[in-house]
Each structure stands twice: as structure tokens, then as C-alpha cells.
Amino acid sequence: MDVEEADDSHIASATASEVSLGSLHELKRKAQEKLSSLTQTISPESSAKRSRICTESFSTYKALVKSYKFELWAGNEISPRELAVYGWECKAKDQVRCIACRQFLCTSVPKITDVAIDVYNRCIRRIREQILSSHLLTCLYRSKPLEFKHDIDEDFLNDVVRPRISTYDVEGLEMKMIVPELVRKNTERVKLSSGHSVVGASLGWSIETETIAGRKQFVAVCEYCARSFVLGYTDFDPVKTHQRWCPLLDINDDGAPLWMVIYMRMSPSMHQKTSPISIKDVERAKRLLSRSLSVISRETLCDSQ
Image 1 (cartoon, rainbow, N blue to C red):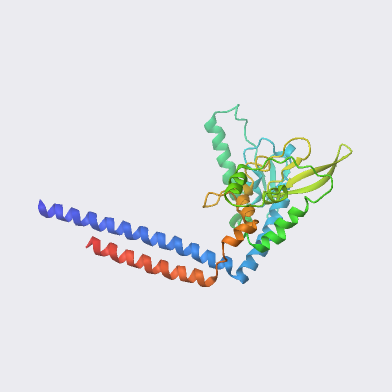
Image 2 (cartoon, rainbow, N blue to C red):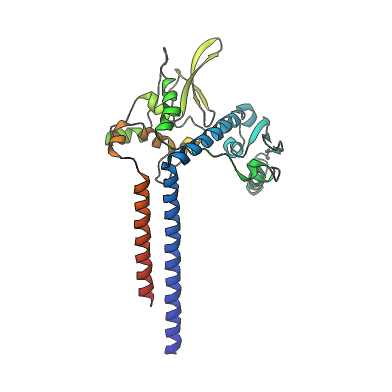
């Protein structure tokens, strides 16, 4: 009986050791992937190439998402973003077509009040599966959806954000903007740029002039969700006016929305507190990580023996 208990104890110890080592290897793999990604980000050559691809993808995405007019898409559970990143352009009410393989997809579902909730949800799931499967097997968008993960660097600020800020410099523009809570909180902690133009541009809004009912009107327009808002009549909430699926509202690993990352990057005080990361810094971090995990692995093995 004692021998059996000893064997069971040994097996349990070995299993725990394998689990611990497996977890360590997985953590090491993920950490190295992050560091490799950071290396690519700060490499000038790869950064320039990625920036070009990102610009091209974003241009395509913007054109596609604009095709989802309110009268054609109001009330549809499937968001234009879900379809646009896979190359689908809205052609009619609840009808989309791929710009590459020219296949059509119907996105209509029964009214939620007319069917059981499980039936409705099943219809939604089927359409989401068809967003991918309805493409031809050889279609580009079947295997490679549009990606435009911006590097929030000086090039992005100069090429995208600052030109957006300049659209606010127009005579007669009245901004009744509600300053986001996140901005007010951070303004107390760090001296961030608090001008309406910086807040609005960081949130993706540019100012355009349109003639509506015979009168010139200033309109805030978002390129990411194609939402527009006529200014000067009611208070403009630059966060809540976005579509709920707008990419600028996406939350990163640190719990911050993309627009806030852009806004903080626009602050001179933030630049003074952080120094740029070099490739040498990343390589040094890689070596330290590898040594640390190797030591932990050896200690785990010794403890299990």
C-alpha cells in the first residue's frame, strides 16, 4: 500500500512538473512573440512596409463601410465593420457583394419579435459563418481580411491626425463638445492637450462643410464608422456619437481605447516622460527573458525530483 501511495505521489509530482514546465514554455513563447512584434514595429524598413499596407487596407475599408447607408442597413444585427473587413460592399437592402470574387450574400434575418430567440440567434450565427464561406475558395478576402492596425507613431500623427486637426480651423465653426470622462480624468493627472480639435481628431472626427436645406452646415464625420453629426444645434458627444462597432472604441491589452492612446500620444508632456525604444533595448530584453525562464525551468525540475 505504501509503495502504491509513493507511486501515486511520484506520478502526481511528475504531472505537476509537466504542467508547470508547459505553462512556462507557453509564457516564454508568448513573450517572445510580443518582443519579436516590437522589434518589427521599430524596424524602419518593416515599419514603412507595414505602414503602406495599412494605408491601402484602410482606404479600401473606408470606401466599403461608406456603402452601408442608413436606409439600407438600419436595424441589421450584423455590423458593417464585420462585412467590410472581408471585402463585402453593400449593394441593396440586406444584400452585399464581394469586391474581389463578386459573390453575393443575403444578410436578412427574421424579426426578433416574430421568432423564438434561439431561432433568431441561429440565423445570426449562420450569416456570420457565411461572411467567410460565401467567398470563392480562391478569393483574397477568404484568407486575408483587411487589417489596419495603426502604429501610433510620428508618421501616423503627421499623416493622419494633424491633417484632421486642421479641418477644425474654419471660420464660423461652433463646437458644443462634451469632453470625454477619460480626458477629464487624465487632464487632472497629466497635462494633456485639451483643445476640442485635438480631442475630436483623436476620436477620428474631421470637419466637413455640407449644404443642407439650402444652408451651409458644419458636419463632423468619422472615417472609421462613417457616422456624421451636424454641429451647432445640440451638444456633440465625440464618443457616444460613434457607431458601437467603431474601431476607435476598441480596447487594447492595457484597457485603454484606441482613441485615448492617440490622444495621449498627441500630448507633448507624454513625449517628455517616455524615451523611444531601440532594437538594442528589445534584444537585451529578449536575452534577460530567456535567462530568467531558463533558471525558473531548472528550479522547477530540481523541486520535482
